[in-house]
Image (cartoon, rainbow, N blue to C red):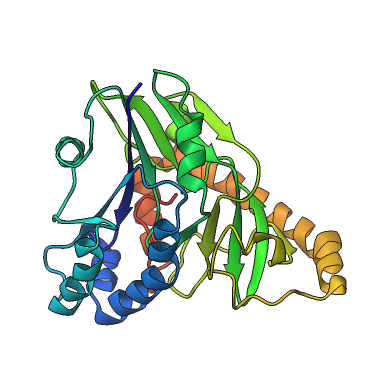
Amino acid sequence: MNVDHVLLTRFNLPTGGVEARIRASETWLTNRWALFQQYCAPSVAAQTTADFDWVIYFDPESPDWLKRAIEPYTEEGLFTAIFRAEVPREVLVSDLRGIVRHGDGMLLTTNVDNDDGLAVDFMQRLQDAVTFDDQRALYITDGLIKSDAAVYLRRDPSNAFCSVAEPWEDPRTCWDDWHIMLGRSMPVVEITGTPGWLQVIHGENVSNRVRGRLVSPVGWRSSFPALLDDVNTPPAGRITRDRVLVAPARRLRDAARSTMRRAALAVLGKDGMLALKARLRPERSGSAAGRG
């Protein structure tokens, strides 16, 4: 069975409201490009399989310096850059058909945000999990969160590194819905095991915050080459304190936030939730429009 695997990234697609102003700013673009170069691009280049394509969407109005910065990556074939003001599903599918090797059998699409990273075997684990011929959402459930030179082990069964595998006849892709909502319209495959992804907490995050439990980076450095080099091994006492006191408090906080989010989503719907986020956080922007 043929499987076309495409990694998808929104870099600075135009959005409405507050995010439009932030994403158009030189500061946002400069900071985001630096994070992309430090985490996202090298982690994709380090994958143990090369049997996939990477498509990144950029704003056609991107500044010249960004277009020049993109060129070395596209020339070496790491990703295909596509400049569009918007990407409705039919346009996305048409773009993918023009890039993939087969165009029949199964299409596997995977989201990665431009400021995050992947374990070296992330793409291979997803491909190995496609042993079916119907439509399903796939999640590598375990990952790492990096914040302030510390790293936290996190299990998230509906995380932003979502994938959808489906027949080519009428694909919806991993961008069909928010990552937390894909399971409402299709079966879910959970891929457990070692951490497969790395979320980076920085000043421009909205939805992301420290979650999980503090761990030593030593056991994960080989899975995330160079991405954890600036993380020191925390003292044993700090790890114990986090596991006994701090991590349980985080879980309670996250459970309360999750309950509130589900309730708000049920009442307001997706459009209402986006409007609420814009009102509550007018000064900041999330790293991806699809993050819920």
